[in-house]
Length: 262
Image 1 (cartoon, rainbow, N blue to C red):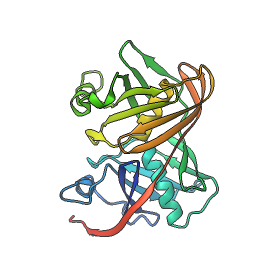
Image 2: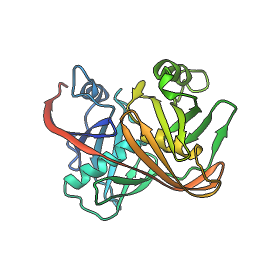
Image 3: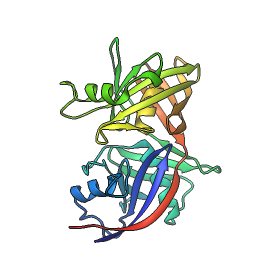
């Protein structure tokens, strides 16, 4: 089976994108997706997305982790698929698409950056050592003195595979405050089972619990290994946030074809 693919990246988080509006790729197997995402034997990516038709929406985003299993919401992937949709000729001032966690609005600004509206957050679990919240995917957020000194892979894997999270999995974020408006985030992602250069839902989770204003409008600048993002939101309380927008770049890397074995 020959597939035509496109590769995009958002702050170093890279994805394979397939135009599946004619359902020609709906039969791709978990094993084939895992092969496509493999960095040595396939194309290589942090995940694969299909752009599908969806009644009442501009399109549907179907996201798969690199292990081949269907995943939850991906913030960097959401920005990339917006650029992909525009490239395919789906031109809108404001987009409305469907993802695993529900409906999303988005827009592409004059500089080509994508503003993606994330789901509202209505619950945050607090402890002395960390926070847990769901921004489309579940996240564990821990503040550290120097994020560059953290062994993200081993510490993240240990938390992700602990008895509390082993069954469903959780993404683990380590966060350092750089100044009143800026944080640095590094993330161990479930499904990828490694550190990624950036994680959109993780950046969002870290920004929410790092809000510098008590209530009302907040904007947090976020530095990641793969680049810079920003998160704008309205803080209602310590556990509730709405009008959350993840803002940042998304770029096409290249396009090609690959033959898949059955």
